Image (cartoon, rainbow, N blue to C red; front, side, top):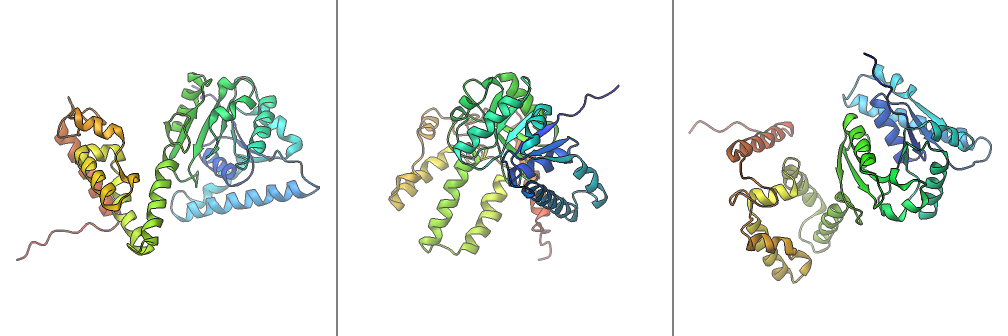
Length: 331
């Protein structure tokens, strides 16, 4: 039985994000066009094309050297990527099934790119902005048929980080969200859906963590090297297996409740105070695994098996990092 052809992708903008998306989809077998929307002087478009393809080839070489795939497979991946200068942009966008806008984080530039995509794209094509700072509904007004539009925030480098944050707008068709989510899953990405809120999920959490790390250096609490070591082998190690809210349930929401009260008082800063939802969970007895409910509902599941699965994943990570050691058995 013949398989339907893979979706054709257009990456609007030939910068870091566009190149990263091109690598992701070409690696997964999709034809991809890097679309340059800017009219350039003679020779400048060719120079951009050559620079983009050299950079993509270099990134593929690095992935191959890291053992992700054989070097002999690089040419096949590169052949799936082509480049359209501004003069050919409309034709390239008209052929695409999914268009990712990835121009610089300048509102006027994004408005112009989305308007161009709207004029050229087929009515059934999905248009997604990769913006990291602008809310979807602040862009949707520049898209004809906004029901086919949403934000798709990739984490750099796009070809390595699995997560993609999808943020539909007020007018986004649920079927469009489902189509893009399914496409990303097929190419090995891990999409999550979040409301149109500043910072999505990851940038909002990481901004707090990164600023707090900088404050620790500023206050002389620890060196940058030790803070990063603590992040990699404590914070990052734990949360590579357990999500933030899953870990809250694992340890008990009461621990977070009391720790937050202590830190807010001891440091004299309400940024450490727990949000109202933690207070409500305490009042309702929703403190996690111990009570059977927290941010997740553990009633009806085999908690012992669940714990063992997570412990096994942590042990596997220890081994991966070369930190697992056998016990001392001799007295």
